[in-house]
Length: 579
Image (cartoon, rainbow, N blue to C red):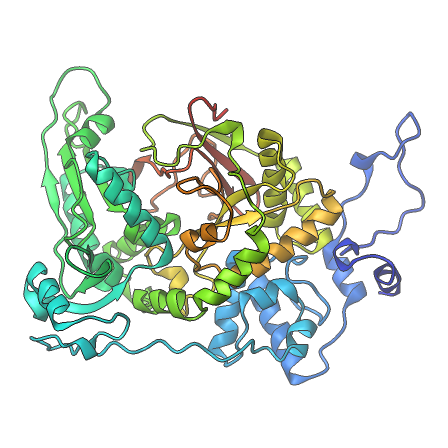
């Protein structure tokens, strides 16, 4: 403890080691240089014992106990850093939700800035007044809608008449009406552009294989029950003759099921042929924005194999949503519905994302960060952000286990998340491929940080893509702490509109701010054991045969953090090579 205190007096906090190992002598190579590979791995458990300071107040006691519970540790001291102990953004969501359920209001941003029980207790926990979502005033038995019933959008009687006319079942089938969330607005814009050309890159397909027709029918029944549970899965988007695009939640929405027959012989992969046989488009004015197309795999020798194309629109789902959906289907198939959490209303997220932080606050932040930007950050000079993904190449790489372990040791030593490391690394790639010293690139924000209780177990589009600008010339020691602070600050604006961020720059009209995207995300441990292996459904007799996600950005790098290792998925359009 005394050593750390002494080091902390002369070095910035992010450079103070999280663990100290006493050696009789440093291991050397034959050339007399430090042999880094021979250094013993730091024992963080022992380090905790040496530096442990017990809680002094009830608030510190509660925070220490909650930290320990979330992180799976026996105990946590008041000076112990959440990220040094292995915490990350997804665990941060769980921690904040747990604290709020006990009446302690802490933002994820505050956790990033003061990641110790002592720091949070000193800040008083609360970071301002709790945002209260306006209630939905549409009665469950309404047969006529009035403007005062819709609390998240200003509508006229004429607007409501148009909406009621467009919804099957009329007013009696309308549960709620509200605007789009920020990322939904961007996707909707691209959807309209794509629709003019007869395509839509944001229809996300997954192909499942079944060992019997009975299993298919049971899956469809369970999937309908999942649709019934979640408002986002019973949502349509209406915009024609309205002042703004609106989400309209239906009380009932039947899952569209199509059955097709594939040619029994001939060339072509059955999965590809099934996707070609799916409806050419998806009408987002109709709920649900999810459908299934099924076929018997006539090329299967036994004739029992069935295929299903499960398609959903990106307006209603993010990467985490598919995992949640399949988990809920499994719960229904196994008659374990009781273990499912009460869904978080998507309207709560929309309200928070649009109202909790004002546009003026968002603008002031991005003016400070992006005000001097005069040219796009476009690796290799590729500027087209309106592609359909059809020319996208993909490469998947698994990071060597030893390298992953060393990387995590470094981030723990600096008291930062692994996300900070990869953001700094990608900034250097962007700098090297553009010649800019302070490159801008998009980062995908989880969006569930402040979305409320159970949002991490509710399907929907919570993520947002926002710009981050990083000084790529910083050393590792300098940069990790700086980038961690930048990510924490950005979290306070995670629901800002990308269009608003671009408005504060000096870029020419129609010019993109950035054309590369870093998507750092957490995946279940051992969900994927090899780079070319698809995730497991966890359902007997059902396999994932194909899964595809595309964006309109020409260069995207997704980092899957399994809690043990890291997996990279690189997508690039020509002339760039994903490899």
